[in-house]
Length: 322
Image (cartoon, rainbow, N blue to C red):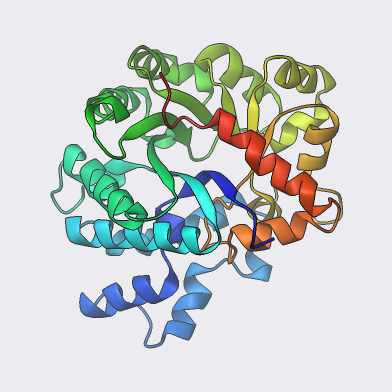
């Protein structure tokens, strides 16, 4: 599982900061809430008795925000994420990030985006690794903020950078009460700006949210989409239109989007001919990495089939879009 090249299309910056880096920065800024790194691990990594709730999972993210309000820190944590991914032979990496929640200490949106891009470039330097950034609008911030972020994302898009740039647009956060149609104008802005379109959908709500992401937002990829397996017509649509599902096995079990007592939805997607990518979501919060995710899948699929999934997923990357 460690040997073949891997494609990572769904990984968040905030939830993937390597724990030693996060802990060191917390101590340096005197922001560590507990006296030891072992106790910090319990706070930042989802525990078994906390599984089954997306909100409990998302609650882990407020700790990284304590130190990712400063340009140099964001650069450093991003670089460390890229280097860790490369150690698992990831050769194409798309990180995603919500810049607005990193402006509380005074950074501008442009600075928060540029800090991640700088970290991406430093981490990828000298490596066989393509990198790019997807900008996230959080649902609970509302449609108007999403439109602002879409325009800011375009201003930092790949075409304006010699190295890595912004390649895509996404919405994330609790789905209930925040239907995709509310964000259609933001997605139209992002589409006209040449960004790739994806959306978290069908993670904590039913398959109708995936339908809406397709029809109202025009996405070509969907994050998680676990509930889509309950709708055969939707599976046919995903397969027919070649809509890739960004599958995050460990994370889906932890949030309750998928049940550990049943095969992960990725198997249903594969059987239905739906393109998939094997993703980590949040390596630190989920206590995982690309090698572990593939080992988990290897219980049911041969290694050559898993390697082929990674190879075919590269064609769906937003990096290098015309």
